[in-house]
Length: 128
Image 1: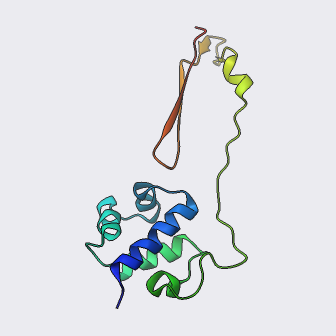
Image 2: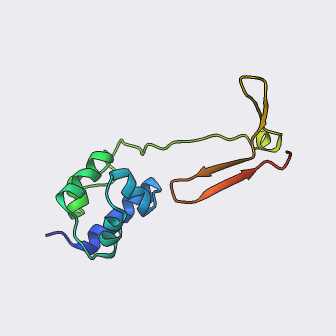
């Protein structure tokens, strides 16, 4: 029998390891966001479909560890896949201009970057 509280703690550990918010985690494994909320609160127990989606998406998770807490996480010799975006701070201070096919000058007005934890950063071109 799965202990809902302990399962929720293991699920939180997985989200922390991958630096995912509950909503991003739900989107990644393609379940409703409310499902994650109900599991984390201990209201619901995980379905077989939910567990299979988690272990399919995240290869570093052992099934037995996820269900019973026995085994290890992450599996030794694996590392999480992270996407890194490099942004040059200098380039953000300079005017940002793009030439369209017919030599029409266009200027970037605003750039918004969304992060996996639900936050965002906005860059506004002050030199129009």
